[in-house]
Amino acid sequence: MRRTGTADLPLHGGHAPRWLFSRMVRLSRALIEVMALEFGVEEFLRRIADPHWFQAFGCVLGFDWHSSGLTTTVCGAVKEALAPVARDLGLFVCGGKARASRRTPEEILSWLEKGGLPQEFSALVQKSRLAAKIDNTALQDGYQLYHHCFFFTRKGAWAVVQQGLNEKTSYARRYHWLGERIRKMTQEPHSGIASQRKEETVLNLVARESLRAQEAIVSLTKEGPSRIMKEIERAKHLVLPRRHSLTEADLKPRGLEKVLLKTYESPPKDFEALLGVRGLGPKNLRALALLSELVYDVSVSRKDPAKYSFAHGGKDGHPYPVNRKVYDESIAYLEELLAKARLEHSEKMKAFRRLHQLF
Image (cartoon, rainbow, N blue to C red; front, top):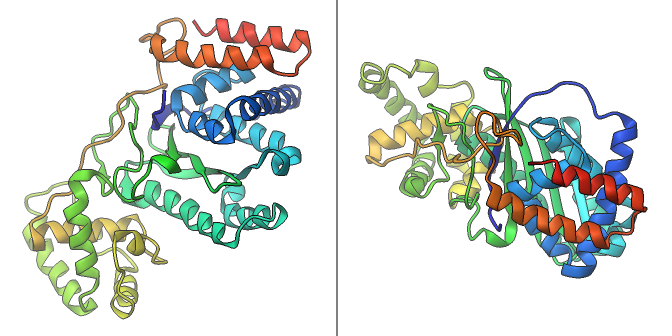
């Protein structure tokens, strides 16, 4: 159960109707309050960071089983549900979809002030930014982030649920993070990443196999920009004839020289610091990764870390059945919470019926 990962989901348009969303808010608040009382708010973070439990949770709240909207709507309902009780529970939710995701740092700092939390917790802002930067830039799997939700407690524990869109396939991929499981954010941060859909072209710079490449890239950025640009010119002739998928734009993206000037004047101490450099986007990092392979003879992981998907599996078994054992565990846990939740009998019965209809 204590796994984090990704989920591929078909993109659906529209919005959750207000009558449904208001009930999702009410039910999620009741479940989370019971969970916090029985197991502590940190357990909620562990559960929300588990893609299987998150999916079951969304189904209990009444949203579509296989829709990408489950992510944004569930996170939105939980955020609205916890807002009035956040300080009492010691559980805070920031961010959201599109423009709301960009307000995450401000919302974190606002909750720190309202909750009277220690000033050192402002480091959570960097955790939030780095999680987004990694899934958008260091893990290049073809999905552009458009949703980022950051959860944290008064003890400083944190989790992230964020989602990206593949514009070519119109599928969304959800990423889960759990702070307590992460030793270093740039080394296998998604413990147990899961997704059935495999992308053919992936650059994974946070994989274990890419650690030497991280060091090589950091070393490169400490060199003079002119020297690196000369190496890139040479690399075009060395690489392009053998790697048909590359273009000159891959090796000399716009703005790379400005980024190199910044890193030369203020050398990053490690790969995590490099990711924090403003202006370092996916294309710039890809160029540096390719160059590090040529100059330092290091390997960069090109394996898609996704292993299991919610994209096509369904309760009717089409085109394949869901993992029943994992789902049974999630459902048993949710049933226990529902039994204890402070809800009217009719609302409980509706939620129980949705749980049993999953299969």
